[in-house]
Length: 424
Image 1 (cartoon, rainbow, N blue to C red):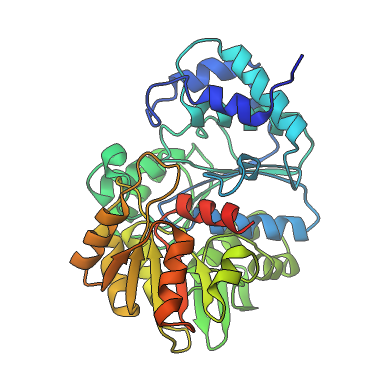
Image 2: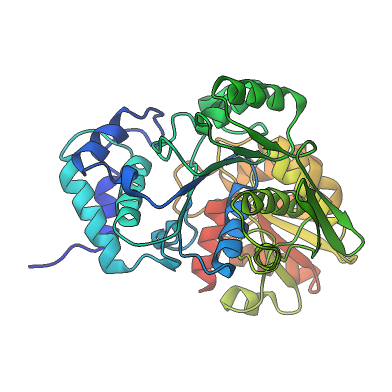
């Protein structure tokens, strides 16, 4: 008898619902009940939502907790190279046998009922977490918050809302207020919520939701502050000031993410040494990640190769701000995007930061824009744009005329994942 691997079971799960995204919690509650409600047996939960920065913030919280000697479960999405990246059990990526077992159990318990891929795999993660010892569980929202499959814990230890901006409007609403309301759906009665810098419109909604739930806010600009100070960062709250190194995750926007992580850690009573570790030891791939080895790097020769998975206007602005701080060097983008994104909003801030852009399709993604469509959008945003068959071809095209270029591969986490798999 051949035992199914996790890849085989995951492929089966893709066929359990005709839609990739269908926001409701009804199917999740049904399956969790069939599994014995593992969400009620989790170690204390820190639940994170937001448009940008929630993955980086989660990585910093995890680094701080682990530096304090805590065992941490962590759930994030999407994965880049392998599905196992989504589920970290007691500090380690879930093993293939354990992943296969919980996926198979969830598949059997669900039967032939409709359920989305994200919903059933989230239930599998919760099942794995409930069966392993840990001190904390970090749950990152997949989409929105109010109706996200992770929003099934009645009394988390803490919630966190990172900056809210326009993205996924087809699911979350057309205004910042509507989107903030969906993100604020993770706020629970009496549970403190750390809130990063927000627009006035977004903050008004978050404050209103928190007031209805009697949930204390720990908000940027009111209860904590984080800012650069020469070549360091300063964090301050009611308990005092921390003078820290800059975050090891590059980009000025990471100071805000670090501030939210520090606010969470301080609220949990984590000490100063562990807070410094949160800033200096966090690892989060495809966030201005320098690629230093592998076949694609070999192809690049003397060129620098960077990778970033940001994909909405706020991410484009943050990326442009970071590129402006780097030493002067001819800069070219290799870009692939999904057709569900605000392509122009993402690209326009970057047009003044690069000498040109080579468009590619995202391999294996049915919602990818074609290279031709991405190149046309880039031209409309002000880029000197061309297209290539794939990422390796785009790198070769750039170095043929600019061998010492800084090359940034960007536009989608799905493209970033394909690059990491290709680069081995």
